[in-house]
Length: 139
Image (cartoon, rainbow, N blue to C red; front, side, top):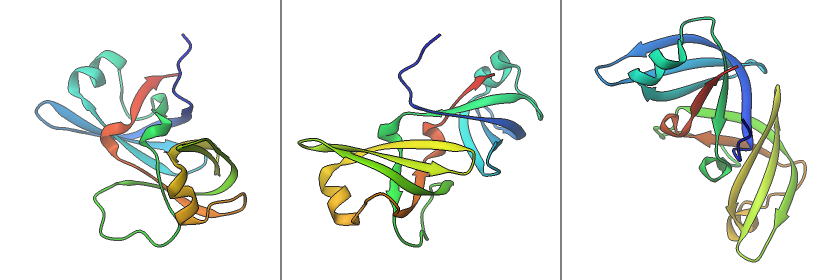
């Protein structure tokens, strides 16, 4: 199956915290970062997830926000540091490619945000991703 989701990073499930309907699944990515996905318990069961399961963490590029300074006071759990490798701008939007330990992320943000943040190749950023926007697939 081919997907249009650009951000697909391999990892291994390290813990699952189940609630009544939803679960948080913590995954250690190949670069050593942890990412948390909030998914349904039904999905956990259907995917056969358990500690040690190999997965791909997938995030649409439109769900990746970027910060150039310290990140404090946010509920966003997933904060992955990286370096901008490419910025492609259009009339209103831009894609920003970021190298992170173990792979690459793409963020789709506004052209104005690129200008306001002063993003260019070599810029250090933190990719911010809400746990509810992370999908998991078994490898």
